[in-house]
Each structure stands twice: as structure tokens, then as C-alpha cells.
Image (cartoon, rainbow, N blue to C red; front, side):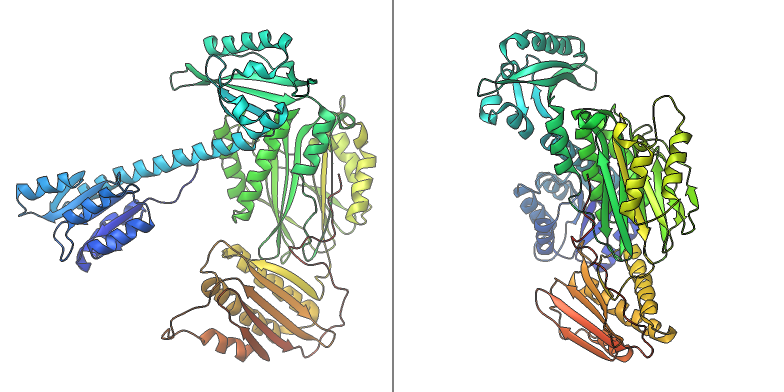
Length: 634
């Protein structure tokens, strides 16, 4: 089941001690509790948030609980929120009846039994959580339906189209107004309609529409073109077919291959400080067999790099469509800040929830530039290969099951050293597997080819030649990542409100300062000053929102270090805040100069300090998180 936020519970009581007692009772439930000390405040909270249940005191000064409940129930958005009234034991029966008439689902008399109250709240909290999980699952299904590159139509048991996705409009050249509420058979040429009718009848009667078959779409210009059609029954909880899902996949493979390469792969590899990358992907069988390979490289906050290499088993549009869906989901999870284990386990749950028949392998790695560490989780994928500076190659075995094989699986993180000068290769099985030979033979060819080292682009070319990638039946994907000896005098990074990102950025700054010639006390002072600026930007500039703060590092030829922190948030704050300004005092004590540009919609803090013994400047490298060199090669 998809994850959702904890249920919210609203406590409404004018007595603070009562709210404290209720908080203590509900603490084991791990719900988000919101307090209100009056009926008026309760109404304001209901306008802002949705709640699983409301605990409402009946007797309050001003607007009492009964009047508050009536107003809550009168509003469309909050009409169905359950309300449990809390009232004194001496309340008469008429008051209880009035509470139920106002919309209460239950009545508890004070002093109440904590176990009884907790159990009642838990019921509504669980119901709310399941409702939101179901809504979220439905949303994901609808998004997947709409985003699928295959044409899809959800039909009734007679083949009448109830819903169609945008891809079907493009495939058939017909607008939704023409496709919806019309027999799906009409999109085919006349001679192919009887076969589709047979599949529709079989699926509606027996639940099995048979294997995909080839037919021809009747183009609006009169020109037919081939499509692969599959009919799947959508069953109810008892297994009875209720609707039919008809998928039409364009069979013009060469066109699909070119389109998918442009649309689903990174246009450019991100430029990350301290890293050089190169990548290659090509469809199998001379470009005519579109498969499910994909790769992605994601510049993560804190100067880290996320790398994904995956492979959906099979060929054709179904595999390519699933590949595009999984690539988008993996990138979204990575940008949400999930670590290696968290991301792969979420991908496994997502894949299992789809009920997919296509097996998928995937490897997700995070390269921490600051520590020279490659952390990765392998889900049934070929093992990564690391090439050391002296040409020694190491294969890191050990993988969990492919995605979706088991609904739940505790994947394990592996750790490899990727110190400056070392190179990692992540690839799919199409690079090393060949018919009639053992996998070890292809892997040995790869190891021999890359042991000579060189630039990542050179290693890609050597690997493709040694493994005869052009003759592969399967897709071939290869990503080569090398750690650079120096970070360079300029680095542009991003920071998010994640502990891992903050820790990584602190270590990266320390390494960058040491390379610039900073001594121990200078490293300590500048890291502390910068950390204070980062914390202020995250807290006061963005409110710890899921956004990023820009961090620029520069050292000039005279050894003056400049650290610039930019946020896009508001710095408006009450003048009476006693803690305001203390961070600035700390930064000024640790840096030679601190300048601030505070604005309602974006603020900048600059720290400057001249190093005592700077090292000669080195050639500047590309900026992090920008679109620079390292263009993906296909």
C-alpha cells in the first residue's frame, strides 16, 4: 500500500490541562494532533486541514460544542468528519440527544477511560488512513493510465469505450469526443474488427482475452498501420469481469525506438563537482527491438550524485512503457530524498502494486563525493564494476530479488570505495550476455577492456567494442562514473532539508577548503560559519520546505574564499524574536567579512575569508546541478 501522512486529530477544549491529558492518551497512536481552545479556533483549523476525527468539548465559553459541530457539519468539505463529544458525567439526556442531532458519532462522559477513548480514535484514524491510501492508489493508477505511451481504452463488457488516454488519441488520430462512448472496434479497419470482437467476448465471458495479436488502425487519412492489441479483463473482488482494458501499441519499432530515446532518456548528464561521467544506450537487434533498459543520473542536494540503471524484461512497447513509468517514479523518489534502501524498497512496493507480469531489475547508487563512497542497492541486476587507479577491477556481487517478485523484501545496502581517480561502471545484461556462452565470459571481456583506464568516454568506447555491443540482441546500457582528484576552485551546489544532504555538504566543503590550502583551524571555522548560514537559510528562508538552497563556493587566485548561500524564501520575522541575529554574530566571528542581502522573496548571505597559505589555483570545473558538458550519448 502507498504511504500517506499520519492521520490528523483535532482536540477542541477550552481547558489547557484537558488538552494535555488528551495528548498523552493519544500519543501511542502516532497521529498528528492539532489543538484548538475554542469553537472559533476549531472552525479556523477545519478550514485549513482535513481531520480523521474531532474530539469536541460540549461546554465551552462563547461558541459551545453543539454550535461548533453544527457549523462544521454545514460545510461540504468537513461534513463527513466524525465528531466525538466529550462532556461532564452530570450531563442530562437531552444534551446527549442534542449532540447526536448536531452530528456526533459518539459521546464520552468525563472522566473517560483512556483505553476506550484511544480505541475509538484509532478506529477513525485507521479508516481515514485507508481512505487516503486508496485515494492515492487510485490517483497513481489514473496517472499511469494517462501517462502511458501505449494507447489505452477502458471499455464495458460490450467493448464500448468508457475512458481513453491521450496516447490513444495520438495513435488513432481521433479526439476523445469521437472515441469515448463509441465501440473500440471502430478504430480498426473493417477486416480486423471480427478478431477484436472475439477477444472482447472471450475476456468478458471467461476473463481471458488471449495473447496480443496484430491488427491495423484505420487512420483518419485512410492509411492503415499495424498495432499490437491486447484485451485484459478488469475483475471485481470475486474474480468476475466488470470492465475490459484494451491496449493498442504501435508496431512501427524504428519510429518508437527513436521517440523513446529522445523522450525517456536524460538529454544531458548533470555536471557534478568532482565527477566525470559518460553514458551509452542502444536498442538491440540493430535498433529495431525496443526494450526496457533505462538509466538516469540525478544531481542530489549536498553535492551527491544518484545513479539508476534498470531493465524491464522483454521487448516492445509494453516493456518500454513500463520502463518510462518506473524511471519517472525512481527519479521522483530520489528527489524526495530517499536513500538507497528506501528508494529500492519503495520501487519494489510500487512494482508489486501494479501487478506487473514483466520482471524488472534495477540498481540504485548514491555517490558521496565528499567521502569517496559509492552506496548502492542491487535488485536482481548485474553487479557494478569498480576500476582502481592501478587497473585492478573489482566486481561487487550480492543482490536482492528483482522488483515485484516479492511484495516485501528487506534489501541490503552495499558500500564500495570510489576514491579520486577510481571509476565505477553500471550496466545492463545486454552488455555482457551473449547466446551460447556463460556470463563470466562477457564480464571478463568487459574487465579486460576497461582495466586500461582512460577518460569515461574512452572507457565506454572500449567496453562497447570489446563486448561487440552492436551485435547484441538485447538493449545495451552503460554508465561510467569517475571521481576526480580535485574539486576545482568553483563549485555550485544545492542543499535540501535532509540530514544526509547537510552532512555531505559539510564534508564536501571541508575537502574543498583543504584542496584550496586551508589549514585545520581555517577549515573548522569556515565549515562552522557556513553551516550556520545553511541552517538559517533552511529554517528562516524556506521553513524546512521541500525546496533547495543554493550554495556557491569560490576561491580566487589570491586565496580568498567566498561562500555564498541563496534562498528564495521570505525572511519576515517578528522584531521581538530574542534569537534573531545570533547566527550572524557567529558567522562574523569566524569569517573576515559577512554580507547579507535580505529580501521578502529571496535572501543572500556571503562569507569571505583570506587563507593564510593558499595553494595555486587549479582549472575550474563545471558547475554542479547545471546543464553543462557530459551530454548523454545514445
